[in-house]
Amino acid sequence: MGYTTAQELAEILDLEGSLAMHLQANHYPPVPTSMVQPCIDAIDAYHDEEFDRLIELPEGITWRNQTSAPAWAIAENHHLEAWLPHTWDCDCNDCMIASDDFPMSLEYDEGE
Image (cartoon, rainbow, N blue to C red; front, side, top):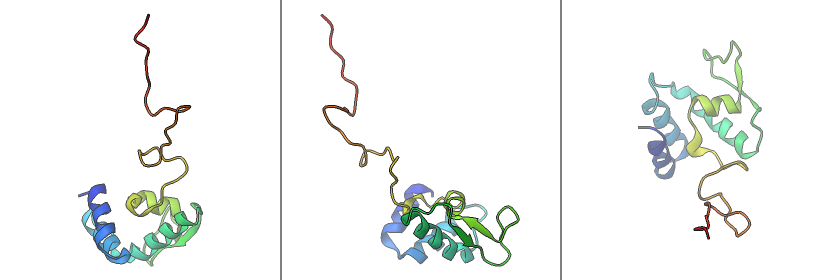
């Protein structure tokens, strides 16, 4: 279980169902399902590029003794990468731009 499982869950289940399963199965100890909505709110904040947006946490859950947490903290601590949009600084193969001016790999002359 892990990132690959999260990606598959994101593709086959609705958002709430996939997050609930991810929080319960991909974490030890399992994360309470009451965190599904804050995770959805964090995903929405990422799509809006508001990484510092404060999100209210469910009763009984705190972050650094606060009842709210920034979207980035929720996304990072709950491993939500499978549901987040790619960012401008992404270096995955789908996002890299190949051109003659900026080759994907180094090319070397064989010498003289």
